[in-house]
Length: 312
View (cartoon, one colour):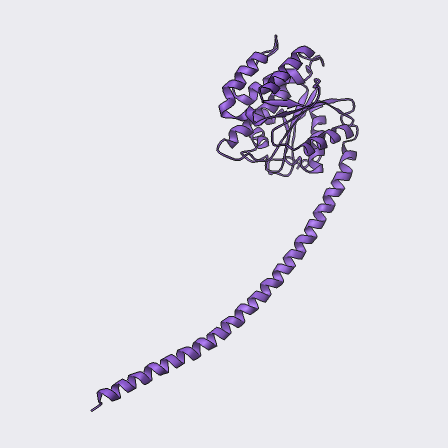
């Protein structure tokens, strides 16, 4: 008969053997795992190095392409706007550098900027809407009729159009210099727009905007810019709405314009104006407007081509 003591000793021996086996097994497993992890680490490090080198090479190629575009873009637009005036209107998110770039490209095309205006965010602010409507109505020159639509973009464009655009049929200013000065001064005093120097009317308008708007009222702000540009287009010989990358999205002004078939049929758009080729496309699109044609250019899926003359 097996004694209790012998039974306990047997159990202890079994547990000891299991423990030793576990330790030996885990040690062997750990060695294999560590070896595998080390191998994976070396492989990933090698891949990271290859990807970094590839990224550096691609960035160098991109920089080279941009330098080439910057050098050739002025030649591509040369003479396209000979002796034509262009009024430059920018939304609140367009930096001075981009506005200066637009001016240089227009001048490279033989044109001239007759006015440089920048809208403020107050134009698209819901809590300033009633004030803007009162200001527009009060500043409206005699004989000028506002559009029937009452949204902020259409109303503001309905005022700015006659102030800044030459009549398409006659080629003459639509308001007197005194009326133009008073109305633009009123918009500035109200905090809705600022003008850099004197503004003279022109047959063409280039409206610059940023990328996609953000926030709860992003679509509303984008719509204001798109509809304002539409009214400028209707007031003169043509207009181009040019935004940065992302502007062709649903919450971007270019995207809003392209989504409206009636607007897209008349107003030209560009969705990569921050690039040299995008700025050149905007100027070439202004030339198309003079020829009573509209197009949509850039890199977004809704673009017809990168630049006019290179449509898909």
